Each structure stands twice: as structure tokens, then as C-alpha cells.
Length: 177
Image (tube, rainbow, N blue to C red; front, side, top):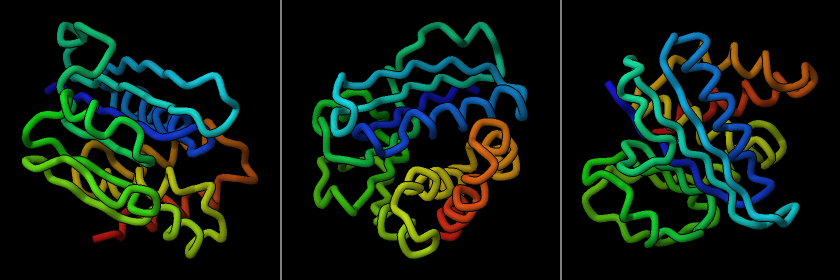
């Protein structure tokens, strides 16, 4: 089993945190092999941010650190949607934040467009946890990880005063259709 996950957004949307939480959940709590690469623009906020995660239950499948054939992709902002179509499998799960992205070029993939920022604002009172809404949605639709493992990883990574709001957002994402 090898899964390639591509997460793309802009600075300030929590893409790097989302990748770290998912990576820790998969490696530490699900006992899978995980490699991840983060990249982000030099701007403090607003530039493109990206996380590539390669996950497997066999170490020998960990042959490259960059996503080449994404099974799962998340786009929080419309950066390079056409460019990234080159790395998506024909049957990939594609999650799109419809708060910022209204159209997409994907025709063969399983596309889920939901307003993650708006859901976060509604359930948590802030759009800053839209990344966790998106993560919950990804988990619900793909089964890539157990929500309980993600909650454990969140507890380990983020400060205690932010835990409840992030879990509330994650659980809201789990409930999205």
C-alpha cells in the first residue's frame, strides 16, 4: 500500500500544520512509513505553500520524497490547479476549498468542493481552522487515517489552548457530505 498526498494552499492557511499533523498521525499512531516535504514562498502570508506526503506500510516503497502520482490532493487556493493536474492519478480524490476556488480543470478525478473557510467560521468562530475542516473531510471520504489518531497528533503538536477549536473543526469536516 503506497499513498501519495499533495496539499496546496497559500501562506497562512495552515497547510504545513495539516501536513505535519497527518504525517505524525500516520507514522506514530498508525505505524506507517511516512516521508514529507514542505515548501513555501518567501512571503510571510499569501505565497504558495505545499506539502508532499508519501505513505506506505513497506519501507521499500519509500522511493521518492516528492509526489509524482497523487492519490489524494487538497487545494485550498487556486494556485497552479492546471499545473498540478499533471501529478494527479486519473481516479484521485481531489478536495477543493470552494471559498476561494470556483472552477477546476479535473475531469476524471473524484472531486469534492466544499467551503472549508465558511464551515470553520460557522462551527469554530474563525476561518483559521479551515485546514482542520479540510482534513476531516479528507479522512471521511478516503479513510486514509483514523480521526482518533489525528486528534492524538493534534494534542501532541499544537498548544493546549488551541486544541478544542481544532478538534471541533476536524469533527465538522468529518460530517461534510
